[in-house]
Amino acid sequence: MAAERESSLSTVVLPHLDAAYNLARWIMGGAEDAEDVVQEAMVRAITYFPSFRGGNARAWLLQIVRNTAYSALRAKRGAPLVPLADEVGDGEDPGTELVDPADDPEVALIRARDRRRVDALLERLPLGLRETLVMRELEGLSYREIAEITDVPIGTVMSRLWRARRWLAGAVEGETK
Amino acid sequence: MSPEHCDKVLLLQAEFDGELDAAAAAEIAEHRALCPICRASWAELRRVREAVRETASYHSAPASLRAAVTARLAAAAAEPGLRRLVRWWREALSGVAGAALAAAILLALWPSGRQGLVEAIVDDHVRALQPGHLVDVASSNRHTVKPWFAGRLDFAPPVKDLAAEGYPLLGGRLDYLGGRAVAALAYVHGGHRIDLFVWPQAGGEEAPQTAERHGYNIVHWRQDGMALWAVSDLEPDLLRAFVRDWRAPSK
Image 1 (cartoon, each protein chain N blue to C red):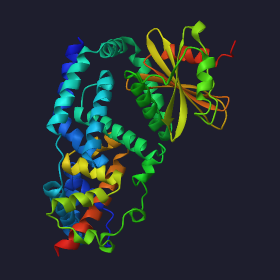
Image 2 (spheres, each protein chain N blue to C red; image 1 turned 135 degrees about the horizontal axis):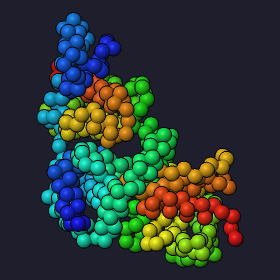
Image 3 (cartoon, chains in turn cyan, blue; image 1 turned 45 degrees about the vertical axis):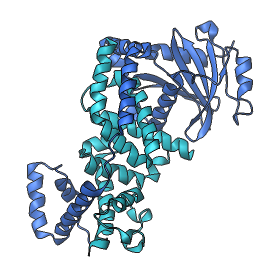
Image 4 (cartoon, chains in turn yellow, blue; image 1 turned 90 degrees about the vertical axis):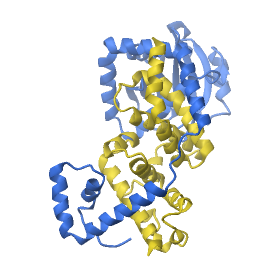
């Protein structure tokens, strides 16, 4: 009985392990932290699996991974729980948190085809914008899935994506011309 | 970043992401043909997508991690804890589901700050269930547990002995929730662990409220200047009974 459930847990988890690690890596930054987060997320997935009602396995797993990563970040920073949502840039005014790329000398050096540079650009995005963009562009998730995983309304997903893309567009444009 | 702005850009972006139905897509295509800002924005979206998809790193799981996860999932099959959870789930499906659903709806109505807290509390409880993590001070005697917290916390948590009511105290530990150190008291009832998180909170009394998260039940209330959160895989009625006994004046 348990073996039957376990094998289906493997079926649910293993196909999305790359997605899980990629998201953890983009949230945490380092490879070692990302591996720890995925391992810890697996413990939670095993525990929570009985309440998994079927359906979107990838979104279910990524939500656990994201929560685990946020817990790890909290533990690292010793920061309070609630303000984390604000830290990631929920404010409507993008100007308060993102430097215009044109005014940022480091960003001006970006080469669009330079992997390290594009990675560095993504890393400069506030966490909330970065994770949203990674889920849309690197994982191909829908607005609805991202909204579910990040626990925000779809409108917030749309505005975060827009702000992330506008900022990156400015940065990439800065060097191609 | 260009200063021009068109209020249709989020719709344009939704079309770019394939999120619009045919009618809305046709409408925005028509608009795009006429709006230079949206045409420029479209080109910008394409440029960013190309840079991110073709150039940014996609971090695939390392082989060692994949092996470790595969092994962990296999090991989980042998754990009695999982079997217990599976049984709980089967039972829940057959009867308690209605109550759990009602609790989940209540949870959805709680302020969003609390939902993050609920998530953190369940996380802490689950972590404490891992071998060796349950308590920092193991004692069924409240006269041992209460002094242990002194000096480790800036408040004196109420520690109650409910062995006579059927909830022996297992001990206490320090936890970190909502940006502060809190007391966690561990009780047991019929093989089920109950964690009770306690910290001071200004404001009035609050009657117990029930919620459910990931198959765990949570009861929250406030009394005597303390916020209290009980979490367990006990069924909601049994957890509420624990809270009732805990709230009853000490004998």
